[in-house]
Length: 142
Length: 142
DNA sequence: CCCGTTAATAGTAATGGTTTTCATTTCCAA
DNA sequence: TTGGAAATGAAAACCATTACTATTAACGGG
View (cartoon, rainbow over the protein chains, first blue to last red):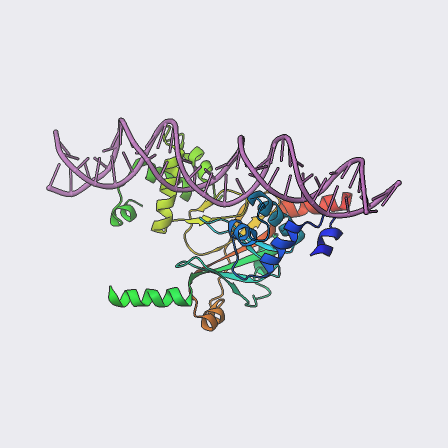
């Protein structure tokens, strides 16, 4: 991380290092505010603005992915490698889906329309194991 | 549309009908504000709040899709059938990709994790024909 | 090691899309 | 036709995020 910052011409600050560690230490795709709460014990004076600015920087440096979902604040994924996500409509959890995606998924569209694809995003919506079984219980009752 | 509203127990209002027609009459995935401007000639007193309320209702009734992108307001797609979208990083346009959706795309993830998939979202990011050729021109110059 | 400069931060105000509130209007079943 | 509930218009509130500004801290050159 230090090297990434230096190479890109940015200063190495305590805030940046701690936020980076917090991100790498979780797979829960936290929001900016959750990250703010995670680092407050080590950085009691940090401001939410700094968290946002740092996350925005990390996004530009390619060390994280920002996930945007309807009706909820952005979430941040410390794993910058392309992978897919599954969003639970019950509890709101965001899971990683380490699925391979068909190589040629956009090829035909690209050929037909001239649209030059540089990346894509795939999200599953549904219910995680826990929420799915809760729903089945409720169905049996009601 | 009238029937859809009645069946679901909602009243048939002029605002709802006009907003619905506006949505069906375009493939441009307008924002709430754009829809507001589209209907103002026929409903001079309509308020933006009503547009938002109506779009939210239509989403719940399954007659439209809401598209959420990072850093820009929600867009609304009058075609509720599952299809993909391609977002141009140059001009911001959102195109429909009428690609067949691979049937088993999430099956393995579902089987491995117990996650019950009810829908998914696939978005291509890149450059539309026009923006792609503009970029090539600029490359040749610079 | 200690400056000076300048980027980064903390604290806070501002922004902008969206939702809520509430008084008024409109729908529609009886 | 009318009473009561639902929907609307207008404006305020909300909330995630960004911008502003004075202060602090990183770090290259002495």
